[in-house]
Amino acid sequence: MELAISDIAKRFGAVEALRGVSLTVQSGEFFAILGQSGAGKTTLLRIIAGIERADAGRVMIGGRDMNDLPVRARDTAMVFQTFALYPHLSTFENLAYPLREMKVPAEEIRRRVGEIAEMLRLGHTLARKPNTLSGGEQQRCAIGRALIRRPRLLLLDEPLTNLDAKLRHDTRAEFKRLHRELGTTTIVYATPDQLEALSMGSRVGVLRAGRITQVGTPFALYEAPDDAFVASLVGDPPINLVPGTLREAAGGASIDMSFMGLDAKPWRAALDGFAAGSRLTVGLRPQAIWPSTGNETGPRFAARVYLTEPLGDVTILDILVRGETRLRMVLPQEQAYRIAVDDEIECAVDPDQICLFAQETGTTIHRDGMARRAEAAA
Image (cartoon, rainbow, N blue to C red; front, side, top):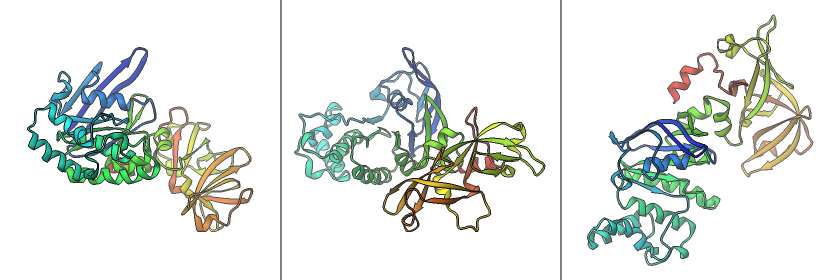
């Protein structure tokens, strides 16, 4: 079922929760909404479900205007962050509750509960109450209660927030399996976790302060962010953002930072509208920095290791440049184990992985030809 949202606005007193949100989710798509706490994710999902009413704008589901339709008429289901299971009912009765409300015959209820329990691996819990279930089982029970009505649109509001790290990892895989088995069900998944959004969503919409700032595939958001906010939100560890200044010289334009200079040639066309002395922001992905071998032709700089964070197969290194600029880099463990805190190292940067932003607005300054490639990737 296709979902089309246009110019949705919602205000709670002095707080403007949503400001002209528009997006389209294709039928059968797994679409993730990524945003920090307070961005408006829950409000948007509640408006789609019909729990909240928008102040302005339109919600279309399957080509039908939903603005004046109640929750029950929308053929949607929503799973909340808190699961909201009935504590006095067994797993069977929690799953059966929506069907009993719909006056479904008892035999059909038993059959459909059995199907859902098998799909979600809950068959062994049907006689148990929610307080005896694990976090993952409670979460699957909440999803099953939403799915048993066979909605064509499923809304998930931060459903993994209350689970531990291992269970979140396992459940991400379960969601992808579930989406594949459901076939035609459209899923909209709201989360503040970029790992969840990028690993599960076929496309991701980034929501910031009530506005959609960019929609694209996970690859497009990482490789070609529209602004510094998206660049800092997508990627782990986050991108290093360093102030720079545009300089003009006889040999051509350059971008000067306190510890390193960059040739501005890759951005020559986009920088035509910027005067010498313009303030820029340079984005250096942690994965694009490594200890120099001395053979690199790109930019290099000296640094001191401030902190190491071993993570098993990789290590995150916090480095200080000229005693004032703190950067992060990621190295394979077999390379990082030789480096210790307070070591002085020379670092090289992959120039092809450098992002450039206008400091005043945060918007991306695309490399020559990159804007067209970014549109294709999205």
